[in-house]
Length: 168
Image (cartoon, rainbow, N blue to C red):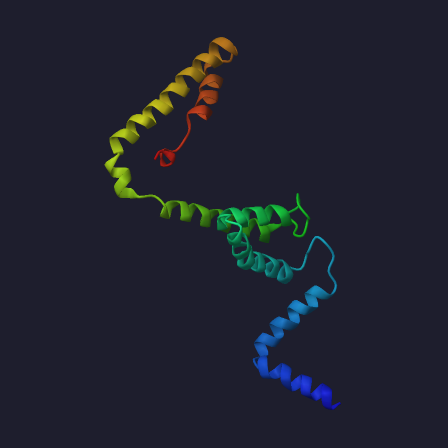
């Protein structure tokens, strides 16, 4: 009984906040009876948070960028990997937030002063990389593939769509 009381006091010394105990209890109860893929929302969220925390740290040691590491970790734990998490609305929401985060980071990398300085080069490059594929795609669709004009324009527009942000 004395040992149990000491353990109890030691435990409450570190975890004296009742809210933290409730959260810890919820996590431990969700881990107790689990099967793969995980279905408990708290456990799924815990796995995602652990991956977000530790994947960049571990992959930084082997010189892999953080974002690429998170994408690789998501592929590993997903339904096509070890099937740790099922694809439901919470995972789709997390994936959408991750995609928005990647686009935000890409936007931070753009140097607008450099882009404005090279605006004429960018415009010329953009015109060439749009009009050449669109014209060649329409001609190939009509004369080689024997498609209608509307189908050829649709096919050519897929080849002509791009972004100028990739231009150095």
